[in-house]
Length: 497
Image: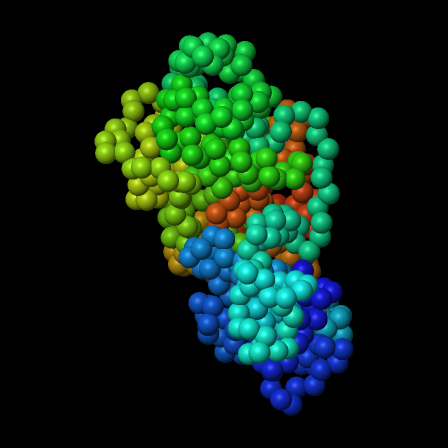
């Protein structure tokens, strides 16, 4: 992101923001680690972040991440949020290098981070372009701000930026070849199959509900649910998607939800799919339930499938509201249909258009996910399930001491009495888990799911970072002991850099 002409522009923008006595070398401010941290911390309050006194790098990184989350809640497409996530990753990398003793390299990294943080507003809102001032340029004219190059809005590039760094920050993730259904179609197909099965309908019965002009048969519906058919995509292009969803008993909100998933899947790189629709938590839950093996990486919070009810409620308070895309009118009467599971009845009845109902539905999905996962763990011959928890997930008591202790003891009990394997990343290993991800394996296919505040990104193949985290984690017995110590607020102190 910060290279070439853009990086030079950031350097020039930073100069007037620093104290006059600050020296520069090759455009980089010569600051100590403490000065750099204080300069970054000073940028947080104007963006809605906390006011920190004498901030350590780990606290600063956590505060930057929380500030990015607040920006996303206000506007899911705010470009500053993705850039602040990158900034937080750089801070965590700097802390790791300082802990490992490479102080010269780490100080250089912190100076670079400081330079970017001082220019957060400019970085987030603009990108350099050649030529004169464009029609969509933002900011004062050149006469007012003569130094920096001409700028234009960055917003169109932000979704691509967020997608490219969501799974492996700072590194390009190569496409994983897969011969079979498109990933987005597979995710959607599992949801359609569930909508049909929970109403006890056959493929032929779904086909019979379609208008005669569509000429579909049971084989066509089967192809849709396995992700191998293009009928839904063609129906979306021709404005007929609502008729197919109506055959599954779903209304206008579900049609808008599915249309967004299909559109995003077409725009994603091969081997990827992005799900931003309101039905995304239920779709992920269905994939997780049917997986042959599950590896969960909890970098910030305990994964949803393993949360206690109180912990899930606390986590939901910071989650953005589910939003149905497009302009779908709120139905005057939206009865909960009788057929099907409770979650699908709400989804099909268009009740997700009501924000309060959508919030309750999201909590219901989480409760069903946790109940189904625990039932899976307690079955004889249960399939493989592993959770890797970062030290931050054990140390963070955002939900309060009592709720956090209950959650830690619940995990310890599951690790002792079920097929769940718990592994804790030690705090002094130098490995930094920055994203909550899940690696699901089913039918010979591995899929990585990365959960964000407003989307779930799927990638073909197992994420190498999740496997590395498992290799570096503590042994199961030691991990259980750490859970119990976390419940008693007796975790060992983190080693200072």
